[in-house]
Amino acid sequence: MWSVELAKPSEVNDLSALLATLFSQESEFTPNFELQSKGLEMILETPSTGTIFVLKYEREIAGMVTLLWSISTALGGKVAWLEDMIVKPAYRNKGGGEVLLSFAIAHAKALHCKRISLLTDVDNTQAQAFYKRLGFIHSSMSTLRLMMA
Image 1 (cartoon, rainbow, N blue to C red):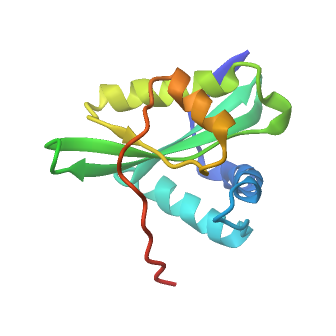
Image 2: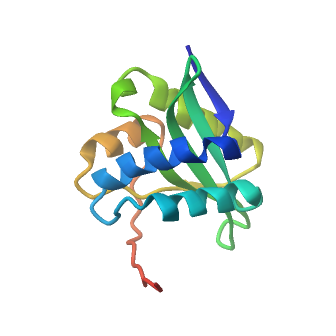
């Protein structure tokens, strides 16, 4: 049975392990347990920054998603950045990812968010198809980065 809950500080190690799986799949990122744990702790300690949800199958953590909060001047309201969506490989293609993401979308709607944005690797067509099934569309905007560290 799937369930979705708010992440707890006691789950940071499990969530960092999930991020290691995610970051080994993505071309721009590298797993770093210490940095990922620090980032997760910062979000959990400052709820105005974002919310982390965990997907559980029975009592085991099977996945996670993070929503980070911002304000859009273009839309005149709160928006969310969907960050770190991952389901453990053993639980994929069983409906849990849709349960998790639908829960996160409903949460953002309840907070009157006007948009949720996310990034995927350009060649990750499976993830893109998943997000499209849940209503996401491609943007004409392009991502640029300035790395500061």
